[in-house]
Structure formats: C-alpha cells, structure tokens
Image (cartoon, rainbow, N blue to C red):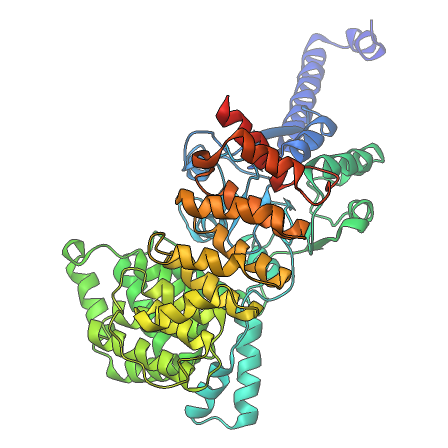
Length: 562
C-alpha cells in the first residue's frame, strides 16, 4: 500500500474522504492541463509527403494531433477544414511554389494545389476565424516561399503620373518609393500578410531542398532535440542552422504596428468574399479616387475583381448603381487613361485599356483605337520586341484587330513585319515566313513567335520553307530554324521526307538532333520504315553518351512498325 494511503487510513473517515477527493481533483486537473497543451499540426501536402512524415514521426501522438487539410477529390478542402472547426497550432505546407500564385505538385496525375489567393481569402474572411487564429509557426517547404525580392516594381509611369498631379520631382520620387514599399508584394511580404500575427514563419529565400532531402535534415534536427521547439512561437536557431546550406529564412506575420497593415486592409477588401459586391465596387471607386498611381499598383487585383462580377442581367440594383457611378466618373477616367497611355510596358498598357473597357470607360471602337495607337507608337520608334509581337498576336487571336492600318515604322524590318503580321497584314506575313530561314537569330525568333499563333500553311508555304532551310549554310542558323519549325507539328509526308533526306547531308549532330525533334513533334508515322530507321541510326554524326531525340525517334518508329 502506498505510504500516503497508509497514513490516510489512520485519519477519521471524513478526513480520508476529503483527502481522496483532493487527490482525484489534482489528477483531473493535471489531465486537463495535458489536454490543453496538446497541439494540432495541420499539413497541406500537394507534392511530397516527406516533410509531413518527418514531423509526424518525431512528434509524439500524446502531445500532437495531425490533420491533413487536403481532401483528395474535392476542390474546397480548405473551406471544409473551416467548417469542421479545425484550429492549427503549426502549419506545414509542402509543394513547389511558383513565386506568387500557388503551391503545386510536379506529379502529372495530381489534381490538388494551393492557390495563394485562397490562403488570402481564408485569412481575410471572417467566416473562418479559427483555422489560423492560434498559429504559432508556419513551415513553407517550397522554393522562394519567403523570397524578399519584389514581384512587382513601380514602373516609370507611376512617377510621371505623380508629377502630372502637381508633385515636384523630389516629392514624386519619395511617394513612388513609398508606394513601392507598400505594394511590391514580395513572396515574403505576402506570406506575412496572410499569416498575420504568427510569430515564426519559416521558408526559403531561394531554391528549397527536395522533399527527401528536407525530410532528412528535419530528422537530424528532431534527433538533436529540435522537437521541443515545435509550436512554441519562438524562432528555432537550431532549425535555421540545420538548413543553413539551403537558404532557409524566417520572418513574422504582420504585427499591430506594422506599416503594411493599411495595405493588408486594402487587400482584404478584394479578398474577403463575404463583403457584398456593391460594397467592393464602392471600395474600388474610392481606390480610383486616391492618387491614380496607387490604383495602378492594384491592377492585378482590379482585374480579378472585374472578372468576379456576375453578368449584367444577374446584378443586383445596388451593384449596378455602384458600377454605374464608376463608369460615369469622367475625372477618374481621364486620369486613369493618361496613366494607361504612359505605361512603360505595352502589356501593362493593353491590360489597362482592357480593364478601362470593362469598367465602362471605353467603347469597343475606342479600345481598338487605343490599341492601334499603342502599336503605332512602337513601330515609329523601330524598337519592337518579341514580347510586343507576342502581345499583338495574343490580342488578335480571334482576328478582332485585323484591318487596323498602321503606317509608321519601317515594314522591311522583320520585327515590324512580325507585329503587322499578327494584325493580319498579308505582305508582312510573307516577310516573316522568309525570315524563318534567315541567318539572323533575332529574325528567326520573331518568325517563331508569329508562327506559334499563325502556323505555316503546309500546302502553300511549307514546301518553299523546307527548301530554304535545307539550303542554309550556317549550322547554328539552320538549327534555330528547325527548332522554330518543330512547333508547327508537320503532317505533310513530302516535307517530312525532305527532312530525312537532309539528315545524312549535314555535318552537325545539333542539326541532326533538331531534325529528329521536328519529326518527333510531327506525324512521323507516315514515313516510319526500316530504311528511315537505318538512316537515322547509321548516319548520325556520333553517339551522344545518352538518349537524345534521335534515340527516342528510332524507338518510337520501331514501336509503330511492330
């Protein structure tokens, strides 16, 4: 019999009962404390589960519960966790990170991913106050998840807009720097905004280790006593030291006095889907009424806001009235369009023009005129870039801009001809097709952009192009032309046979490999014979030391012939 029971047996009955009650209460109290101290580790596994398993094996089940938030087969798994009342003390996110938009998997069969917009929505949305409200630490196992480099820069148009508004050059530069600091939205700042008040957010400022490597490092950390640091809210210098060779860094969520809190409030006006649409529209109007340069910094969010609006026939009377007030605000429209026309990047200008049209500030004809003016200015300077050609082709994907007459600039220049070809100019297209076999790498690049949107006509254009490419004497230029041709996915048997005839005549493995690449991306089955396979194998320049496009093509042809 334990000593305390033997001693208590000599006490009067009432005293013994009282003592036993006290002991029972102490046991219950200690149990409640233990339960209260039990922590929940939430995991979001969209790629490797290695990091999650390292945490699970190191943290005992008596002190930690693990909850995987991803539910395979359903898209609203984060919202599902909110409805289930999950409260996370520790959050572990495992997935590749694209630097701004989402965590994703490298497995082609995977369907789950984690949009950063969804994290933002949950963080801002009052309907799910518990999920992240008691977080002590977050682990972001993705490349550049805490990269401090700005995702967006304050372009020159912002400073010029501030000067147009009456600020001196010095004042405009100072305000531009302030806007840059507030709106740059680096990956690190965005995570600080999402995980507000979280004491420790771990991530990587550059390339993160792959899952198995990260798990191995975590196991060493936990074996060295690191498990005691988990969920405390204190930065673990031991964890940072273990990952010191892999650019791990740590930061904290926005605190009460953080200068970015005002920016977070604006962001949450966009992200919080519990705000009525008309209230969000009124906020957008108020945003435009600030210094217009600040609205420019919200361009991406403004585009998402507009795209989220219901069709006009389904809008409430209040929402329609709020949007009408924006459309009828001539002062805001004037300042917005001045800023749009002054944009340094053509792509930004085009996006602002499109948004202006959707907000009711431009008719379809006015949008078309604005785009024509923009491209006319680019042609006049004779400084058209491949990105601007790509933009022209993209904007005119459906032929809506065909027929625009642009007269400025030198149409002989391949860059200018490429832009005009994207806008439906037939003579300019002929110039671009000829440029595909040019000795100039830049000319080939412009031709490649145009033909990716407007492919070669395999009856009228392709035979002449094949003949020109076959006759090229510069192997580097010939290789570039062939790689450009690979995107055309050829089906003409005569052209494919021409490539096979060219293969043994060239004295460059690079050109031979480029020929094989074109054939792989074409309908090679029409020419797959034993003679062709023998030519590919016997006439290659030299072995490459490993599989290349030639080896793959040979295997696929043989498989087709079986």
